[in-house]
Image (cartoon, rainbow, N blue to C red):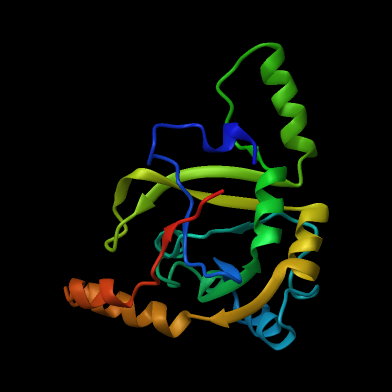
Length: 195
């Protein structure tokens, strides 16, 4: 992995995810058509999934809940999918990544602009969210895939896809009912992913 992707104050940028010895889990939110197709095929196929635009994967369940508004933001994000990837695939994705924001200027800025346009993987760090979707101090990773990285994601690295929409709705209902401790118990058990 490129050192710059994780450069930070310790703890500020750490990949946290649900994983075991076989897989690491990421999340995506889609329409019924794309979700049903992915579940039927065990991967994303075009159509209805688009292989020509960037797709974003998120290891953080809570960041996915923030991004999709618990699956209620719009009909194109109403189904929450948990996608299990091989560790080899996830690490390959990270190794290809270019940070979405650059702090330099001049020739370094121009070089970064070229790299980001040509990269198949874009890394972005956003504030992690708590159970009420409020910002936390540390950041969580989301990863944009396009071109060959997207093809490899769909054709080589996906091990399993699970619809977790019902789980999402149950947790959301508990939060809305102020049953926070119960909601927290239902969250996927995420921990720091060493790279």
